[in-house]
Amino acid sequence: MTRALTIVVVEEDRDRAMSIVDALRDSGDHEVHVIGSVTGLARKIAAHAPDVVLIDIDNPTRDMLEELTLASGPLERPVAMFVSGEAGGLAGAAVEAGVSAYVVDGLHPARLKPVMDTAIARFRMMRQMRNELAETRRALEERKVIDRAKGLLMKAKGIDEDAAYALLRKTAMDQGRRVADVAEALVTASGLLR
Amino acid sequence: MKPVTVPVAFVPLLDAAPLVIAQEMGFAEAEGIALDLIPAPSWSSVRDMLAFGRVDAAHLLSPVPVAMAMGLGGVRQPVSAVSVLSVNGNVICVSRALEDRLRDAGYGFDFADPQRAAAALAAAGGDRIVFGVPFPFSMHVELLRYWIEGTALAGAQIEIRTVPPPLMAQAMAEGDLDAFCVGEPWGSVAVDAGAGALLLPGRAIWAFAPEKVLAVRTDWAETEPHLLGRLMRAVWKAGQWLSQPGSRTAAAEILSRSAWLDMPSELVDRALSGRFTLSGRAEQRQVDGFVGFHRGAATFPWRSQARWIARRLAHRHGLPAGPAEDAAAAVFRSDLYRLHLAGTDADLPGASAKIEGTIRHPMAVASRKGQMTLLPDAFFDGRIFDPDTAD
Image (cartoon, rainbow over all chains, first blue to last red):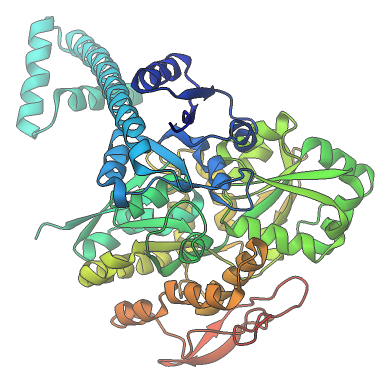
């Protein structure tokens, strides 16, 4: 029997980190470590002598990991950015899901696959949640701007809320723009005129 | 006709200017393309987006394609540097603590003399000096090491660490770094944040260092030659526009927008004008040619530049220099540059390699149209690099 894989997850957000760790532990008998703070990142990772390092593709501290890929770097066995080859389309799926994996030289693809499948699924889910959150925030932001624009119109033209909204919608339709964009232009312009 | 969209990855830095300007000033549109410029949070991210086909072209550190050709680093995908996007543009910055010690020792912060700066730093730096750089394969590392080797710093204990530029000022404040080498505007950002003082511009070490390149996947260059040509011409014209003195204010304003650098245009303008504020004491210094996008055949990918980078990397990583240099020279695509810019006003040098470091004053050389002017490319220590002789 081969020994358990040692996996390091680099993630500052504690909840996200735990979610990844739980998923990985469920998928097999792995030793999983989380590194939260980025100071001296490469050395901290090297101390665990990991087989696999997982990090969010958008994490700006990723460049600190590049040293791990060098033979002269802090690790005994250099890691390579996980690329396709034998592991098939996994790399592309990983990039799409937003996870980058650094895998130690010579690790057998069959041992890697379950880890990657799990990581990809989990990161994909987290990315989706993040997108939904961003979408919700944006919608809230837009609603606020539209409310302000309605208020401006009501005051300037002495009309009620429904009429103000109808006017915004009609202007947007006539100009082929979004209501939120028309509202924003109005709020900006009224700020300038004040 | 609807323009063809070309996705391009970039890191929000001053030297992404040719890409931003190509899109914003209509040079891309004139070539029938639209650049979908995708900001990346790290250089590994830019490289991976390019290698895995998320984008077709990228703003990349000039040593990255060389390192990839040598098999160094995490990704092995053939990538070509089809033109140089910018020469120079880096600064070395020291922490407030070091700044104070340097001043106490009588150092005048001339922002010009690498020997004097190194001597002062070696005397004031203590047992060990930790430098931050943005990426292990970068002109920042090469300039720092070249400077350290040839000065009083050669005897000092030096460590070079990778730290993302937006985190450098903080790392310095926390005592993890004593100094760093970064591309603008991050040096000026650190000065304005009260985190440190500027010590040297990169060009004081090498007067004509290829900083960023326009990189594409080699297979994409072969399958999409027409698209590549349009992209290269649009970017070349943007560089030409940027080199005109009258463009400076507009360029600073455009780059400062939230979609690009998202910083005050005054900060962006310091590198474009070469007028720097060195420290919290509001000392000003002027650096001519701080960053170049066009003049002196700045965008020509000299094979000798690639060989210089490769020889340095090979020595440091214990690889044979000969094969490394040959592999590097093959990824700086002066052939594609000649092919795709043939139809423009771009003048093309007669040779594709030069002896680096010999030019001390603007010099006329043979070119396609007769002759063209190359700008000073000297190293601070007066050494030269002859690509035809083994080191």
